[in-house]
Length: 302
Image (cartoon, rainbow, N blue to C red):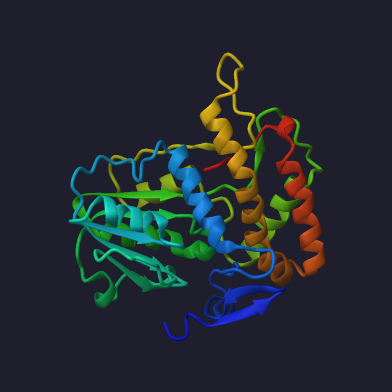
């Protein structure tokens, strides 16, 4: 992957030129103007770490020796795993290979297009992995790649190894049922789904689709879970009392999800749907206002 660090400015945001030229994963990659992609990914990691009970992975792996992460982003998960399991060799793949400060010695990072087959010896070295971790890569993976993507991960596992996959379903839902069908968030989702499909991407990758892919690839002991990440501090228990822990997570999620929508839509809506940058900004601002309405009791399915 040559010149993967080159950037191109689109609508006052920095994008990876390699991705834009090849229509791979077209989202802002670093700090420009009002947008801070790096901070969003760091906040996202912190929120999900707390949301998942400070677990890095759910399979019971007591002493992992080799772990692969597909789509390491800013590297928070990969770094944490490498620090927690010092005897484990951790490998991170990402289309935009961001250099990390204080990178652990047992963590190696590679620029890689996840649409390509996992068959390059200098990257994978044919070492079987205890765990392959894939999270939030749907916008970068072609719809036709998913079956072989899941098969490739299985092929790289030890006989006792595990795959852990997490994807957002960006059709934000309302626990109170008050989100109108004509709302900005519904409009945003409809445009996102259309733009993703025009880009040959699957906007509806979630537990059910991932589950079918895992079954078809021959995985065993498949455990599917659907989570609801609260947006706003509305989350209550069965006695209708606010849950302090989830309320804090929900409040922290508002800005993170706001920037997630902006990141996911800017290039897609302008390039695939022909919207102007001003039109995209207006829609995003209207959607962000709804994200702050706690009466809607919004959540993001995963």
